Image (tube, rainbow, N blue to C red; front, side, top):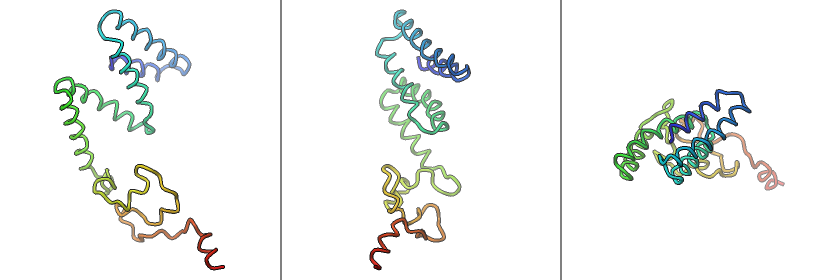
Length: 160
C-alpha cells in the first residue's frame, strides 16, 4: 500500500500541476477503494497509509522529507519481522548513527548530543531574540558574546 502511495505521489510530481493534483486525489481514492473491495487490505490500513502520506508533508525540509521517505521502508520491513521491538531497535540504531555524524566539525545532533543547556535556546522552543547574547559553544566561536545588543533601549533608559 505504501509503495502504491509513493508511485501516485511521484506521478503527481512529474505531471503538470492541475493534472498531477487530480491524479493524486482520484488515484488515491480509486486505488484505495479497489484494494479494500478486493479484500487485500482493510479500511483501517487505508486510513493509516493516508494519514502517513499526509503527515509526510509536515516536514519543512525537502531533503529531510526524502530521507524519511527512504528510511520508512526498511523500518516497516524490520517492524513486520520483529514487531514493536524491531521499531525500537531501528529508531535506536538511527539515533546512534545520527549522534556519530559530524557536519563541518560540529556534532550533527548538537546541542542535544553532547548536551549543553546553554546552547538549547532555540532547539525545541524559540526564545526571544534578546536572550541570544552568546554564540553556541559547538560553533567554536572566537568571541563568545555577541557584540550587538538587541535590547539597547534598556541600557539607554538606565543611563538617563
